[in-house]
Image (cartoon, rainbow, N blue to C red; front, side, top):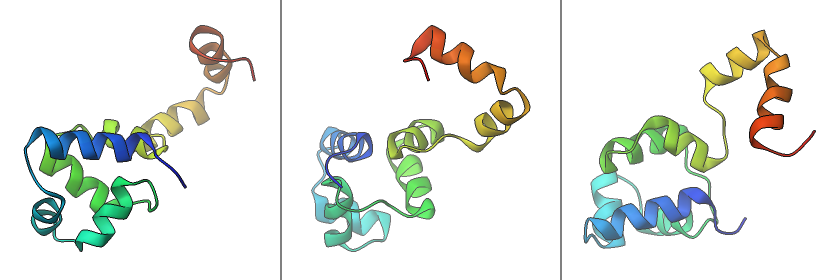
Amino acid sequence: MGKSELSELLRRSRVARGESLRAAARNLGVDASYLSRVESGGRRPSDELQQQIGAYYGLRDDDVTLAVGSVPSDVIEILQRNPHLIETLRGQYGQPG
């Protein structure tokens, strides 16, 4: 799987708190080896853990969702109702489709 934005975000947030991996795992209610795999990019966290991570580290839900590589559900709904916005976004901010 490799490093992901989430693994970097999670590690930075934990280190900024001066917290060990074991302490963070204990406080999040997960096994330290599982959290280690999430931080290394080898495991994608459950939706529940994503929410816990956001709340625990004071991160916005959207930041965690995007770091995982997902798109917030409200944004998906907007794009489904307005598919022309996809090309507009690509033209303004990204690569052509």
